[in-house]
Image (cartoon, rainbow over all chains, first blue to last red; front, side, top):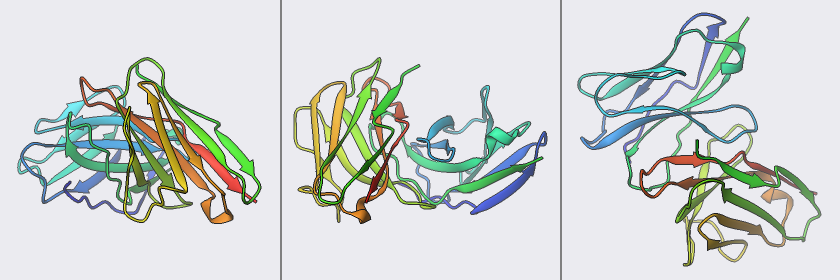
Length: 111
Length: 115
């Protein structure tokens, strides 16, 4: 699995967009970018994933650079309940493999 | 959507006793489940891969005789922490894969405290 690099922590004002970056410079052509988050004392929650194109769902948007070496998760209107650790993971979709978690980014949404 | 459930969500036990944690896939069959351990303020660390009908595959440094994994059916995997000690206190999380799509879902986690 490709290694990812994320800032250890970020702050965001409530109601503003939270932009969480992730570097994955060694990603291979068939690896997807996955984002999960973990709210304190809960299991990880799936947010979104993508291969090449930008993706959007009800939770977030995922912007992947053209060279696929980095991506950004965007929470358009952060709320206090979005305070969590966000993990960026690259993995082969459908491989049934376990996901390897890095350190993640601890996002603190402040009033 | 698919749900993975763990039980118990938290447990306190005395040192030297054994504790069993269950992981169930509620609306799909999971041939493979994964067990993770998470210490405070650290990331999830994979402990083992649980395969239905066969022996689990353990990650390096994880004692298979201490952390017994049984995956007896397509919807249930159990992790038994044998002769638990205070250093085994941790947050244990399971995940399960839908075979057809490869989608991965996580359980709510089980917090073990060994006194």
